[in-house]
Amino acid sequence: MRHLQTFAREHTFDIRHGVTVSSVTRKDESSFRIVSDAGEFYAAHVIMAVGRDTEKRLPRWDGLEDYGGDVRHAADFGDAKTYAGRSILVVGGGNSGFDVCNHLSGVKTGPVWFSVRRGPSVLPKRLFRFAVHRLSPAMQTLPVPLVDRVIAATQYLAFGNLVRLGFPRSIHDAATRLVTDKIAIPVDDGTIAAIRRGQISVVAGVRSFEPDAVILEDGSRLVPDMVIVATGYGTRSLADAPVGSNPGLWHIGLTPSFTSYFHKTYREATDIAQAVSASLRR
Image 1 (tube, one colour):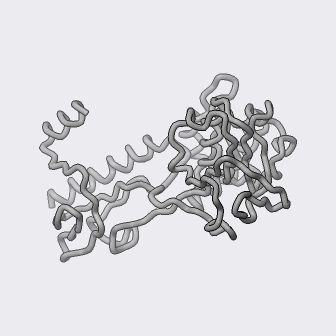
Image 2 (cartoon, rainbow, N blue to C red):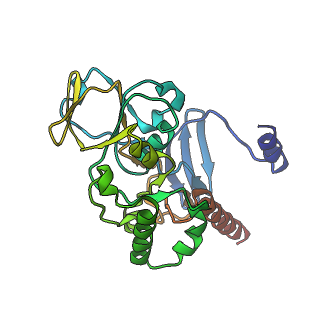
Image 3 (cartoon, one colour):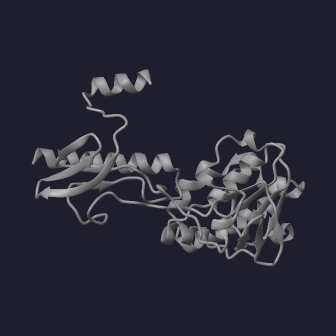
């Protein structure tokens, strides 16, 4: 905290903590009107740095409103140690679902069920002690269909045939989904090992809820202590115009890439700072 305070003071940044912005609209050709619970502000440039994952997505399953059990979104996962000894149903085989299971794999839980609808395209955190993310810059330069095949080959080399562990057959389109649908690629850091030793079981997708149970698409009935919904996020924009259509309005952190999130946002922040600086010199 002291470092951040020193940084702000040296650069004379006017930082307002605990302020909630409700809208950003165009005041005139050269400025924006920002409405917040601390009053109105006006600025020539507005940088939307709220990120992509701002809205929790929860499917509208039949019977969910009458379900009496504990249901929470992956965003509210909290400390993995609090799940010790409990039975858990994790719904969603994407990045969030694997991340939740990665954390649970290091805790002595009760039975954990991993509910998935499609075969995963998942990368190991390390392959033969090599950090796989180090290949990301090279992957960024390759054609997307080729990256799909590279990810598929890496997955098979690391885990073998995941169908044998109960997963549906994979389509192997991880790179394509990242580029076209902005869906992050799952990373395994303990989930597959937990499945192999029986702590986590792969089950079918969720069909509906009853007051005291969860019904899967294959008719199975589960009664977990809690349900963790890892079905993704949406993005809520406070601005009155879409990305790229409003000069002076900048967005950062909305586009995932094969490189790390911090590497990507650092490049975006640098580009925005240079563009804003150039506009002020005109």
